[in-house]
Image 1 (spheres, rainbow, N blue to C red):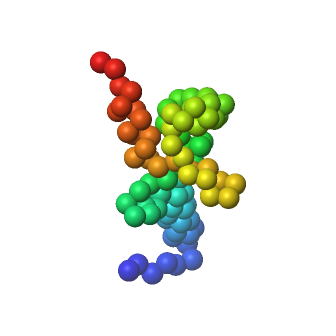
Image 2: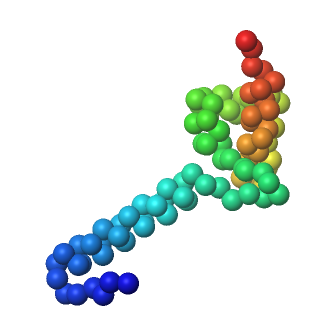
Length: 93
């Protein structure tokens, strides 16, 4: 491992490495979700982005029973596999 000196180039290289690591961690936090028994759970906002719909449309789909969801206290989650199944079942060629 290279020893870091007091030069400006060394400090800039260290700072760039730290910023790069920070950006990688932010990317991981945004796009990789922990699994619970093999399932990925999505928030309503993520489902809206995935389906290109508004929050109100998602609410209507929930009210109509078109998209299954899980309610944990005041948090509503959607299984990714349920969303994919709904899309596959309603795909028209």
